[in-house]
Length: 189
Image (cartoon, rainbow, N blue to C red; front, side, top):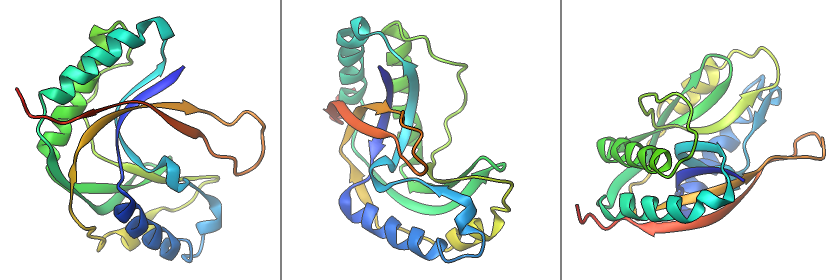
């Protein structure tokens, strides 16, 4: 199964982001972007790719330990950016050090559980909201995101998500996400 560890958005923050995405959708060229659907709005902490189901018990145990060692922390949506011409994203502010630490712990938990992880990179907090369908200048969209300051929330948990990619070839079809584990951030270590 295809898995990743993440911090999901609470409903109020998803509502905020939906209003911003609606405004961005009115910028000329927005039709050349493939906008992510609301159920896919999350901060990925550690992308694991295909994981053998036999590794799940150990992975769950290690992710639970990572969450148990991490305190809940404040976060808010903030501004945005892009990765070349591949993705438009919304950033984060607040407990970025804590978010990076949780990402490091989730990555380490997966590796120790035997998940074949890709090359380790420094974590950059981002929530992907769109991907270009064609060569599209993303600067007007980044400019539209620049003043965005979302409301603060307390990140309460680490979640493990299963991603099911579209298989039907239907234009605009989105991946489906299913939470397969969630652990409260306890701050015990």
